[in-house]
Image 1: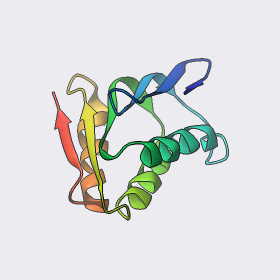
Image 2 (image 1 turned 180 degrees about the vertical axis):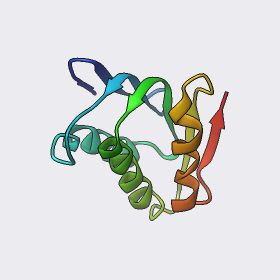
Image 3 (image 1 turned 45 degrees about the horizontal axis):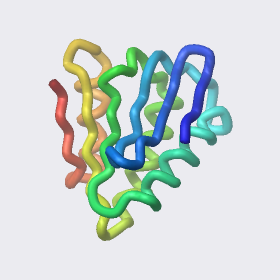
Length: 114
């Protein structure tokens, strides 16, 4: 499954147990992010064990997008058998700070910024 916008692509790669983000996401509000929220929820239900969220190719995510990801982490922490791994790119300034903040919502989230 994928969600495609003018400047972005979000895909769920089930064999890799990964949701991958590409481009620049600047949607307006939670209603505009509903497709991405639904994709994340579907991925969470289909993947037993570890789900990877790969932001390494995402150049920008606005505050509404960060809020959407944060809400997903809050929902995901309630799933007993799910482990969440977040992959970021240290070359992209917003990722180190914003992605690490997800651990404040769920300390068991594994964060890899490389």
